[in-house]
Length: 342
Ligand code: UD1
Image (cartoon, rainbow, N blue to C red):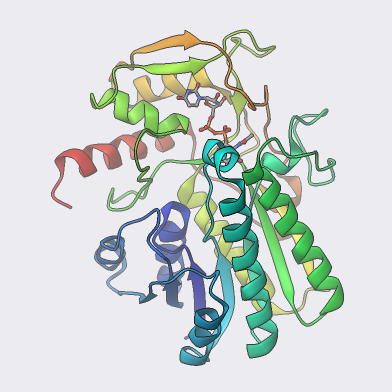
């Protein structure tokens, strides 16, 4: 049984990826400092898969603890690296915390990969690297644009670190996955997105409004040059996204790959406006969402969606779940955390 390290494995995308890995028979080691997740996610993962993953609680900015991890688990063959801070607004307030956490943890892991001969890493990147692309859908060849936030900049710098490292150390193989907008939750409603405080992202704000935790949703702008004036994104079901990580890890483990640094767009290829998402939620769940139109949010791009041709053809992966399933699973999860017993 192959052992894979998932950093940030109790987080939103991490926990879904752990479940998909276990489903395929991998032995999973999670490292997470629980700064943005709960320890009971481990029990929920076990409820779904029947297997409790190994768990180590620390922050990977500590090089000593990072190395000790690989001493303790010498059979780790690949790493899926999610652990990072990800709040755009907070990163503007606390840039140093973001640079330190997101960059140093990656550097420590890459050093450990050399030292302990763990050659493979899948890295969690973002479509934020494209800014507002000139051409849509956006392909992997579109230029990377100056980041709007320190958070976005950490993703760009991390990709550069991976590129340079791959050049200098051909034995290290890495794939960066550029996510569009992950939403939804596992079909069991046992794991999902658990934002701390007031949600910054659209779908958790919708579900919290629908359940009565928030008075109303603010729609940031209705004067964009889009189908209905609200901003357009490529929303992707988190389980589709999780499955792409396993495919990427297996591509690295197969080791027939000539490239040792690659990057792929992970989206559905379809753009949806904020108003279309609200509508999809209402239709999928039969529940109205109270909203008002407010000014545009600073730093938001007008519209972006993915060209997924390369991911489809090279990885052999394609998102299979539509907006309806994203909205119904997000709602089932919201109800379960507020009203359920888990
Ligand atoms: C942002 C980041 C992305 C990051 C993600 C996770 C950018 C360009 N994108 O995505 O890199 O991975 O957050 O945190 O920085 N909206 C509302 N009302 C709300 C919330 C959102 O109208 O209360 C709108 C936004 O204006 C946007 C859309 O919904 O048009 C999606 O917003 P959000 O879920 O925050 O994701 P992004 O900003 O696309």
